Length: 482
Image (cartoon, rainbow, N blue to C red; front, side):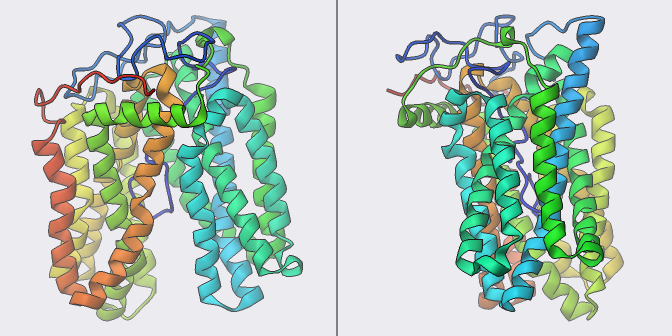
């Protein structure tokens, strides 16, 4: 579930989980009836599968969780497994970033149609967003590790065939890209499911894991897009796409061979029907107003970041600078700020007050970026504010990820976190449309001023007046959907 669209869709929920063969399968019996614990009821502190104890209106303290970390060789093995999981996920993301460049280029060179480029992009993103939540009940029953392996192997095959699009036709390309997007959506979710128990067994603080992962993912996104362009030049677009297919195959191999989570990490998932399982996930999220508020804020940040990247910054650069290099500079400075912020937050994050940091990061990373474009034509001023906004965004995704890991009961994590990812992503396509509409209706500077105010209201007001304000709200207990 990422809180900024400047480096492509992110799982700003970079924290989702579970299965019948995974270390974090839900803590219920093998029956088809209701869960033995209400959907919104948290496990007792110290019990199997309990997340870190948190005050209802707070984001928690960043404990590693309830599972006791082994010592000696056991901890070293757990850390190797955690490193393997993160590396596999980053490798598949690197391949995906290559395809972000290669597939549009393939469409452009084979069809010459910008409209068809947009169709292909939408064909990938919509199934990605839907499968992130709608496929989680199946992953829950099939097992997250098994799902990860099968989905990555299937993604490798589908992406390899995508490279043959010039011989298959445009319709086949759209269908293949849609399948690839759907596979990648659930694949991303289930890999993150395995992070939490591996981190707990390795004795790694969850907030440190999520902040480190977020920084690495941003670095991979930047590196991957550059490598994608170079690969097209060096080996051609077809081979560049095959390299992406190879990254998925390698990811499946790494997880299949090197990741062997102990079955004792969690009991079997509840055997619920598909629609009942989805209702249970939505039902829990409705009751946890802290998480719901954070997701609303992240979705709003994604929406305005998408509009900024797709419309507002390019138009400002055209009108004020007349040099397209300025567009890349603005985005690069934001990414640089985010990477620096990740380094700082990885070191200091476990000792900082989470609620305050999340609120400050959301406030700094949203409205100021729009306001500075509306009020100045000086590039240096825009770059300074953009850099500071990048630093602010660095705390948002890790805090959301850690909070999801810690607050959601084990038996609901796959569903709740998959749904959370979709909610965070939904702002991205809306933002692109909003950016174009606002400029067409108001003009660039008036649109930026109005949207800066709207952004501030959507990203700051819920944090200062909603359940994240200390002691203001206690989520009512949820009940299992029937």
